[in-house]
Length: 140
Image (tube, rainbow, N blue to C red; front, side, top):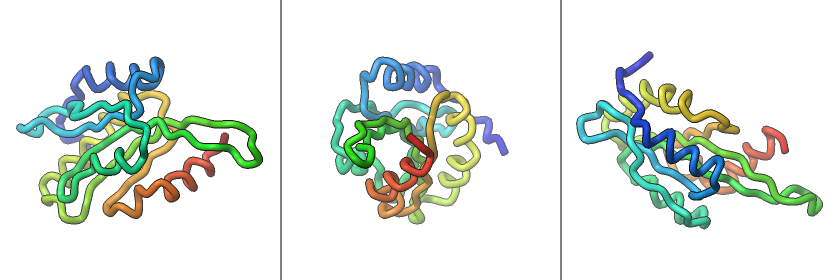
């Protein structure tokens, strides 16, 4: 189902900076005030995962891309995966959750090269260890 919400070109531009230029560690996306366009709300070079998680507010939906870095078992080196997050907390307004659900695919399709998707409604679903388990399962 499509919501008719468009993806602002800055979303794709900033994603390319993260993906190719490693300019950012993560990007937070949301809707503009009229719910007609997906926009970049924040870019950050902050590498701390706990800081990243604080950019998912209680009661408000968000999307994000995080350059997830992890260590391979046995000292075989580090890997990075681009992880897409869809944050729809249970206490968000119903209308917002519906618009976010129907708009997610438009954003996700425009961001080529994502490794996996994490859907969260509460903070334990986007906790570092939870995401690490999923990222490791998709391969090195």
